[in-house]
Length: 109
Length: 164
Image 1 (tube, rainbow over the protein chains, first blue to last red):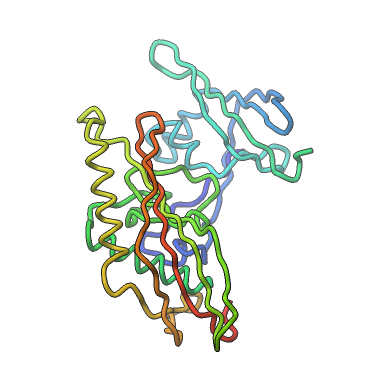
Image 2 (image 1 turned 135 degrees about the vertical axis):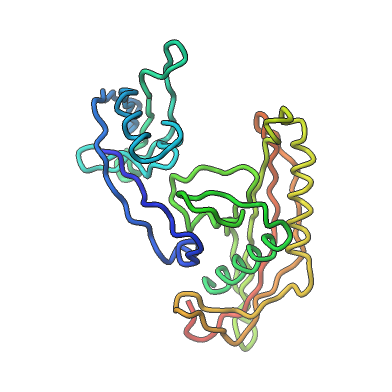
């Protein structure tokens, strides 16, 4: 699941001062392949078709913008931060997005 | 301390917006003046170019006196890639423009403002001022095609009784 913050309220001083927190919505991200990385790091391969569907329905301009705005990815109830995003292209169109996820600090040993 | 931080941020934000209303940024779909406080945003937020990012670093308290004097160090980070239409060749000029805006906003008199509590609505004026020194500019760093700078301002306030 991809956790997305709700759009900010224009002119809301409370949000700018950290007094009000945005609401979040979880959207399904599938199909994906999860790979183990170093330590708590994980790599998530996401089908571009799934990303394109989200980009269209949520009004983003590109997949990279969608992931830049995301708060994180929920894996078995654990929120992982998106550390970096790379995309592989075929004939100029992305066919897979490669997300590097960073685990919560409490899991670092 | 938090009241002083909030007051300083909003004062600086409004001064920068008055100097250059066109300097805005989009945060989670909303267009805002081009200054944010990093600790008030989502940890996943990206670092926007052509905008100012405010970070509170050092703090010390001088307890000698009727009210404790708090000195806070405020870092203001900013950078620019230049205009894509100009091939980024104007990035030095754009950074110089940001330098001038920041100096104009911070160093303009008066370098003080009445401290307010924004945790209540509507905000209420407290009894003391927030005041600050001149901005000190760090060296430019080159990060790929981006020119970046960190400027520092010392912000002072009195810790009032019962204040967080």
